[in-house]
Length: 127
Image: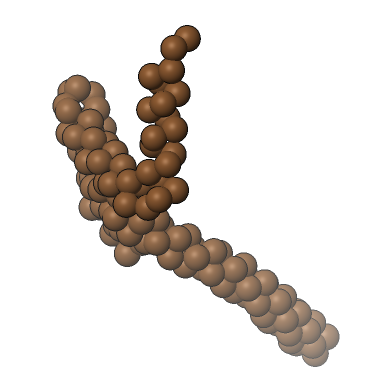
């Protein structure tokens, strides 16, 4: 009889501890899941902004992260690393296109045009 009561008590304690542990772990999981969702949203926002400025390689990787396409993301990172190792000018072309887009945006606004003129004047000034 004592063995049965002890077994029941042990079962109740284990059940209670299991519930407490599950609740704690589930709470941690939700917090991590929320942080990951925020990071995915930020990655997608950054990818859109970088694509607007003319970049192509990095936004593609960020978009894959945002949709959690890990295999494609890793493949694109690997391809980009191979481009860098091979000395390919694809990255320079990507940056050149970005430079042109940023310059066009700057020149389309009076403040940006004034900034560019000031930079040119500083370069042309006698030293």
